[in-house]
Image (tube, rainbow, N blue to C red; front, side):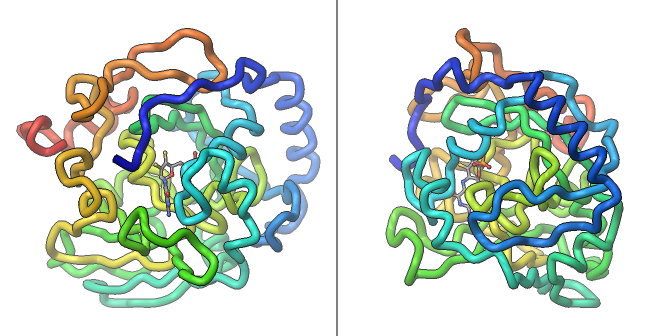
Length: 306
Ligand code: MTE
């Protein structure tokens, strides 16, 4: 099938704390700068700021920027881990419009600059667990998705949210999945305070390979639920069928909550390899976010709703 089991990572990709601290100082000094909006592809490290530190962040060591930006899954830009960073010219992150449509009283479109004005930009350091068995700790920059959803005023009949990624068949991968890449959440999951609409990482504008200019981050679910380069958010009544559910219904369920007790049909999900570490670690229920999210699934059979 399409998603592959774990691959090995070089130990040299571990975070260098000195480099990281130096960057933080630079970003703090640049804090008075106007917000940077999406820059032309290939433009290196445009700082976003000022940033609010989030209490929802983990204090675990961060994965190196190099690993976060060169070891990617973004199949529209190629299926090898190194492809997305090499094929950034295939996606132009500016100008960009993100539509909110479907069961909302105020359907509308947002430019990236409009999204940046909705709420103070937060730095959220989250664990990210890929279904393939590797994980990272990534300092995202963004706003709560709930803030954006509120702008559109969802109707009472809206129960689910569908996310549609940008797709251009003239420049992007053909085949592999039924494009565009679509993902979905239940409305309460989409409104959960942990669910982030990310516009940056490591204090800078989001690189193309990580889903520029705007992507979802849902840290208690496998990484594939966090759609990249989103162009539409659709409020719907029925549970959407996502691109991965279409590709492999027995392997990829709608919920896809990180769960060490429910294996992928072809490999165990009990452990993971944190990029930059030598030995494996145990995967935590809901990727370590159980205190915040478990209540949303109380009474549900998690083997059935995987
Ligand atoms: N979004 C789109 N549009 N296309 C993709 O191929 N891959 C998913 C997810 N979002 C993917 C996507 C998977 S499998 C993972 S693990 C994460 O993005 C990886 O995000 P990262 O490369 O920023 O770490």
